[in-house]
Image 1 (cartoon, rainbow, N blue to C red):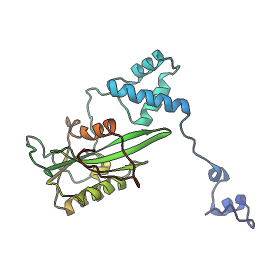
Image 2 (image 1 turned 120 degrees about the vertical axis):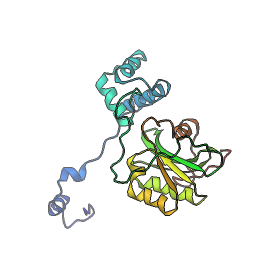
Image 3 (image 1 turned 30 degrees about the vertical axis):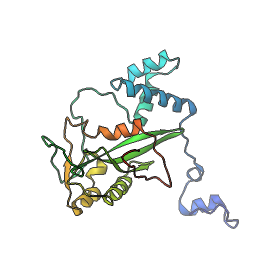
Image 4 (image 1 turned 135 degrees about the vertical axis):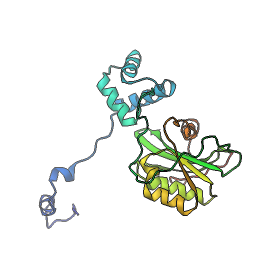
Length: 236
């Protein structure tokens, strides 16, 4: 609503008219410093090797690498990256708020053909100055990456984008996911129901069901060709 090129009304007056503080208009978000980005890279690499490292052990490890950091700084960086030490604890999985619940359908199921079970999960990709979130949809039997999409935010829309792209190729019998808010949202579940796909949600103790997506992130370089979406062939 503010027009900086307007010479008839000053920016200060325009802000006053729309009820906006001038400081808010001029505010520019500040990203992570180069030092913090480097620390986050190191934390991510070490967390890959030792996911049981918490804040104190990660801080001690960084100090052995010659970095002067305290536990408060490491805690903030790990929180920003969404990293937490893996250890047995109660209430491990907190589902999204939803009235409709779907059972876990894969217990005891033999997956023996293509398009029997699809799975999805969200992970992140490191960039030079930040992170992108990646959602991928895979076929359990073939490990085929049907579709993926990336986003700078954890909203539902990029998950729906990947789902729509995957459904252009085929339709599964069962679609399995965790109980994150993206996958338990009404928009996502309605799309699966409209395609007559049975919905399966992970419960407690099923943290490894969607580990294939994390392997995609850690073992593959993603060619962002012509946009944020790409369909991989089985040999990619």
